[in-house]
Each structure stands twice: as structure tokens, then as C-alpha cells.
Length: 214
Image (cartoon, rainbow, N blue to C red; front, side, top):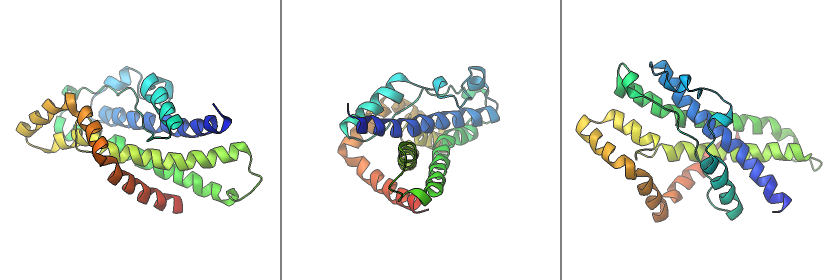
């Protein structure tokens, strides 16, 4: 493996690991605010990535996708949520579900701000490797978080968008969504193969260009 590929993997994995870490912590933090302390008791309300890393979804799959030059995405161990602890479960689940994508949006703004701060030296031909790495991480960080935000907002269970939809519809439709959830990931993969990622990619590129411009 060449030094350039290793450099690229590092620049992608660091923003990816923190993107999915903050995403999961946001779910657990909001759940705690609504009375569910499950994630807190299990030590999952921490920004230490080790507590959230899934060896396959956080490291192996993203690294292979970088090496293959494909779409880079990943996942962490889901934060445990027990809706039975909520006083108003449907209302609570709406905010718990939406918290993850909103955390990714805030992370995209964070990387955009860091890139803006770094712009003063971006055209310097004598940039150190560390400075080049930070700039590359900022660019990847913006797009990774936008991809995770938009992808997770798809109204398909078990994605966050599916859980948001579940909290908004009547119970009879909610039970239908519950029955779809075990097969939802296969539905998502099928839609991706059918071209779903193209409109998502266009949205991400548009939003990313705005944030990169900032």
C-alpha cells in the first residue's frame, strides 16, 4: 500500500470515526434528557471513539472502500435506547432520532470553520504534511458528515429518518413500519444499486460546495 493511500485513509478515517461517534452520542444524550438512562449506564455517552467502534463498520469497510475508490460510509455500534423509559414515547423518539443527523450537520459546520481558518495557508507550497493532512481532513469531514446526515434522513427504518417517520404517523402505519424494519437495510442497499445515491450525491456536492466556500 502506497504512502499516498495510507495518507488518504487517515484523512478519511479520523473524520468518519468522530462523525459516527458524535452521531451516536447525540442519540443517547437526547434520550437521557427524555428520561432513558440506558446509554449513560452502559458508558456510551462518551466522545471516546473506542466505546462506539464497530471493527467492521468503523474500520474495515471504510478502509476497503477508500482502497477501492468507492463511496465511503460506515457505522458504529448503535447506542441502546429503551422507549419504555420515555414519558411520551412518540415525541421523545422524534427528537432522539433526529439528533444524530443534526449532530452530523453541526460537525459539517465545524469542519467548514476549521477549513476556513486553514485557508490562509492553503496555497502555501511549503505546507507541512500535518497541515496538508488537516486541510484534507476538513474537506473529507464536510462531505462525510453531509452524507451521513442525508443518508440517515431517508424515511426507511431502521435509519433515523424511518424512526422520525414512525414517530409522526398513526399507530397502524407505525406497526407497518415496524414490520419493514428487519428488512430495511436490504431495501436501502437495493435502492442504492438502483441509483438512489445519485440524487443524494448531488445534494451533498451542492451543500458541500457551499460549506467549502464558507
